Image 1 (spheres, one colour):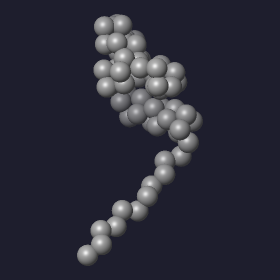
Image 2 (cartoon, rainbow, N blue to C red):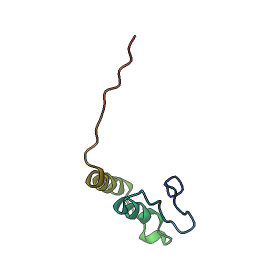
Image 3 (cartoon, helix red, strand yellow):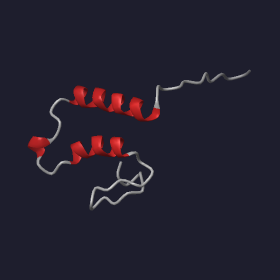
Image 4 (cartoon, rainbow, N blue to C red):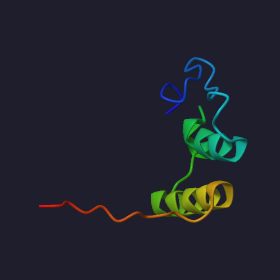
Amino acid sequence: MVYLSGGDVVKNKFGSRVPNQIANHIKQCLEPNYLKRPKIVSEMFSSFVATAKDVYGSPKFHEFRLIK
């Protein structure tokens, strides 16, 4: 994710377009000491979804229709 955001993978620094709240949330998973990393994936994911909603707002879905 760091690489895809245009960041520096050596320093675990995200690209400039990634909001700090999102970057900080993901950096928890990159913690060198594995004992400090999140333990429960479902809680981490729920927390990430809440953070993304705070940053970007509610998801918007657009209907995709194929025309015959």
